[in-house]
Image 1 (tube, helix red, strand yellow):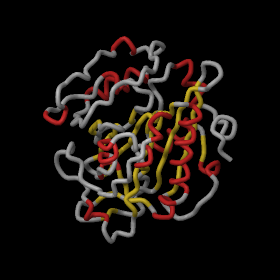
Image 2 (cartoon, rainbow, N blue to C red):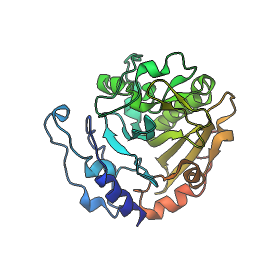
Image 3 (cartoon, helix red, strand yellow):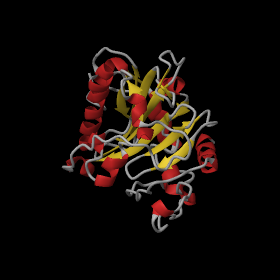
Length: 290
């Protein structure tokens, strides 16, 4: 039932889309909604028109179910999908699928942060971050977008960014980004969803556009095990503060992370696999994390 609700609610959300990334061949035959997947990808030039996310996108394993979707606009770019919160000027979540074959691009980091052209109305601008004392913290990192110049450019949209403590951005958050790439090489494919946890809003806002500074950040990973038919999942939560510990110190089950993040993860995974994946973790055995 949760998977059905996720699909229906997501379809109902307004959306301005940048580009629909073609499906990557994952078998969704075990998914109860797999039969709803029709090809809506042949739309002509996506920059000249607006349309809702395709069923293929909404059924992807990385797309979460947001418990409170009262301020959520789905936006699709080449390398990632996000739920944008126009009130907070930051994403609710950012999700993408990372393949081993995407890790060998040689594109240089863009370094130019810009407003997201898919967003209508008020949003964050680069000036909001200048002199604020907070980093422009990527959710979908540039290191995962070296396979396409468009994907690289679009990951520098400020809709994919949150005010982040510099020590965290350059420390444990960066450590996990590198670990995700390692896992993509190991498994061949990893589904990623991450984003801010606003919490009590203890740090307030920055800039003229009042961009919310989160209390912390989450990230959840899913991969298909090499042996057998099961899946492995793991969650992480990081306070938006200085301090660097081993990644295992931030790790938890996906079920535990759902309570912190306010959303359900990997809801499109067939139920027989999801229950096992989200309820337990093996940081070292499945993820080589100590």
